[in-house]
Image 1: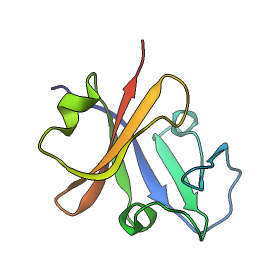
Image 2: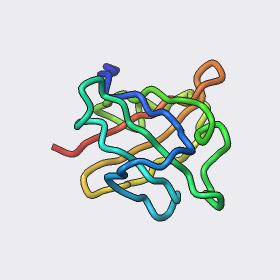
Image 3: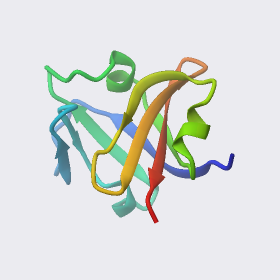
Image 4: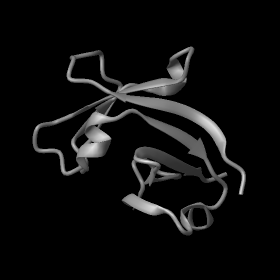
Length: 106
C-alpha cells in the first residue's frame, strides 16, 4: 500500500474565511490545496457528532488507492464517508493521533 501525503488538518475555534461546510459532520473547512503548505483549517460546530480527538488534535492526511486495504488492521476513528462526489474519506487512530485516508476516483 502506498500512502501519498495530501495535507495536514488543524482544528481551530477562530473564525476564518471558510471555503466550505460539511453538514453531516458540522465541520467548517478551508481548502488545503489553496494553501502553499497544504494546511486545512477545520472548525467544528458545538453540536458536531465528530469524535473529540478529531476536534482537538491535528491530523495528517494521505491519498490511498484502495480504502479498504488501507483500513485493514487499523483502529477506525470515523467510518468511510463521502464529503464530495468522487472522494471517500476515513479516519483512523495511529499511536494516539488521528490520521485521514482519502481515496479519489479517477
